[in-house]
Length: 242
Image 1 (tube, rainbow, N blue to C red):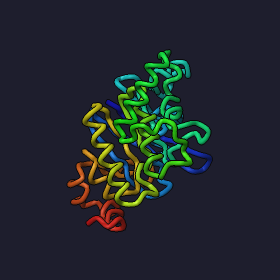
Image 2 (image 1 turned 120 degrees about the vertical axis):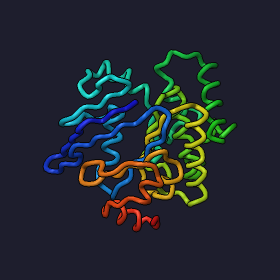
Image 3 (image 1 turned 120 degrees about the horizontal axis):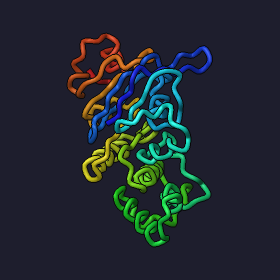
């Protein structure tokens, strides 16, 4: 499991995270919602070991990661697959080369890399697209390639930064179904940050709201819908969820 304890992060005078506490159990999908600029992506990057907090602790499978030296943090980061908000594909690489990018340090044979790439593209519904370049892909296809790359080396945790942003409702729904499918098929634990409240309620085992640098409420989608917290209710009403 992942446990975040009293996490603080400042950027100059901007105190973004102000004592975040969060527990994520193995096998669940937890979605973090909140207004733009509230620190959702900053929290995600801390969990993945990509940023260091000013205060607080993060435990990943019982290991406190915030003070680990760089040589040891790599072993923790290998547990995570990361789906970036803008897909972050390399334009000069093919789809197959993009998916294989994270496998370079695993000392696999070319045949094994090719097998994994084919398998991961099959999981996301992009069989036979290895030779295409990102410029030839739709927005939804780019998201799927980014997800295939994230799962290629068999992570235990997959982190999604706004996975449906910029997509039309039909394509966004297909990405939601894919997140659920991969959780069940690969037994991964997923952490999603999103503005898409309907997606959050659809895919999540639990939804947490980040406000003023803290998780002010967390619960099942039904519990969040029925929250008595004025901040949560106002946020949901803006997103069309009552």
